[in-house]
Amino acid sequence: EPQEKDVLDFARSCEAGIYYGWAQVSNGSDRGIYKTAMSVGWNPTFPDVKAKTMEPWILHDYADDFYDCELRLIICGFVRPEAKFADFKDLIVAIREDGEFCRETLDDEALAALAKDPFFIAKDAEVA
Image (tube, rainbow, N blue to C red):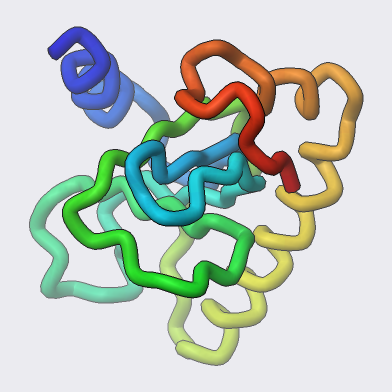
């Protein structure tokens, strides 16, 4: 699939860090398009991680799990480089701050317009 190749190319070539964008579980019970903060990298705080990962945090509370569903993402920008935290509490604070930054940044008119991109499946999906 071309989109799968695009995801792999992005993961391999992008700088490790935090990104913001839009996400949709395109075949789940909730097909809304929601703000997303995403970590891409090696998770240096956790030494057992051996592969570069992409971990989107969809800034929405879903009523149902969406395991085995298709997730569509549009990455809009970069927040900060990946960091190693000596204290787990500091990691939690950074995650919350990143989420708030992403929420606010995606309110920008040009970035908000990307939530209506035809890449997302349901044209009448809720945008939040």
